[in-house]
Image (cartoon, rainbow, N blue to C red; front, side, top):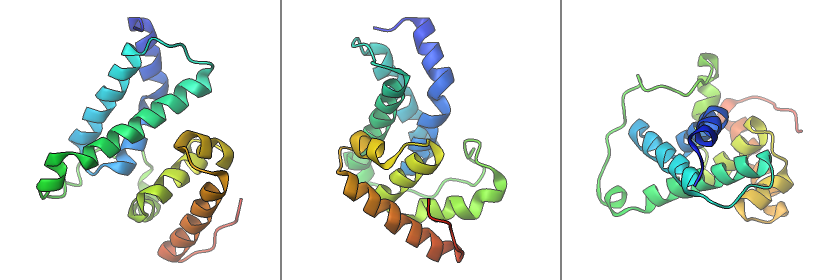
Length: 162
């Protein structure tokens, strides 16, 4: 079990990343907060040490993605029809002028949202994303390519390939 200082440090360093990952998967602010708490509770209860700061960050992202998937698979989620939450919800520090881009990214299928976020926002390489998501490198390259095409079509612009 981690100490209070270790938990505080992790929350301070990775809170925004975990919330953004959750926000990409969940539409409900309350679900995002629930998953956020669950992720850091699992972090506190984890006894195995991390190899590096990157390993710690990758572990937190993976736990967040899995927790979001668990919410989508839950009985309640499958049997209840939700109303969209009000626009007054916080957008987790997303710049206001990026609302078109954010809407386009959120409209992507989940697998494309994940790779776009991890590649552009978190700075992971395709190889690292493949390892993080448990997919082949070629799959990640394909998803990135398809996501870029979908974003280009949605936003009506040209994007430089990186």
